[in-house]
Amino acid sequence: MRCLSYAHLLDWAIRHNLTGNPEFALWKSRLTELLRKVDSLVFDVAEGKKSDPDALDVEAVSSNLPSVVGFVNSRLDAFDCSPKAQMQIELAVEEIFVNIANYAYAPDVGRATVRVGVTDDPLTVSITFIDRGVPYDPLKKSDPDVTLAAGDREIGGLGIFMTKKVMDDVTYEYKDGQNILTLKKRL
Image 1: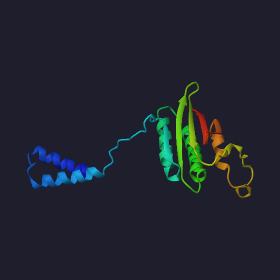
Image 2: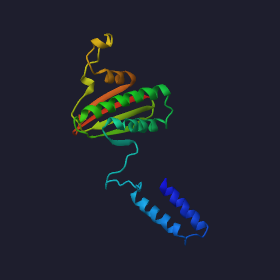
Image 3: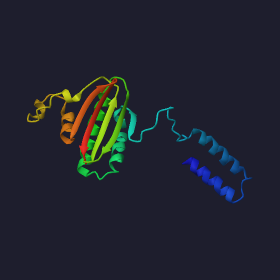
Image 4: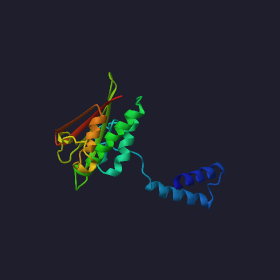
């Protein structure tokens, strides 16, 4: 905000031929100082590695969940995704990402990649989560007995159970040192 204010003052001074005033020099020096501290918004991509607009690479921490959900939703907005399907996808994305954040690298922190793809006939979204954490296939865990009272059930497993129920397909593979979990939902 200060950068914009100083730029506005400088522009005003130039338009009114007041560049010789001491305030002009002060505003110019303060703007120059501030600009050194402002991010350039230039993103360097490693040589030979192209940026993928359909993938988001983030630190696997729960505080990044809003960014992950926002990224997935931004991809879904391009398609006529029903509110019900979008809510189900958000539930599944939250469950998978939070599990990666809490367990894949514990007690350390690592990175996770979320890739979104869409195919036609039928229109289907695929959301793939990739991490280099501890190998773990959540699909091998048996489904909880939801007929039991909550206090009588074993802890854990309900999130992946709900994910399997709301998505059309959930697959897992461990390949090249990576956990790869893919969710699919017909739109």
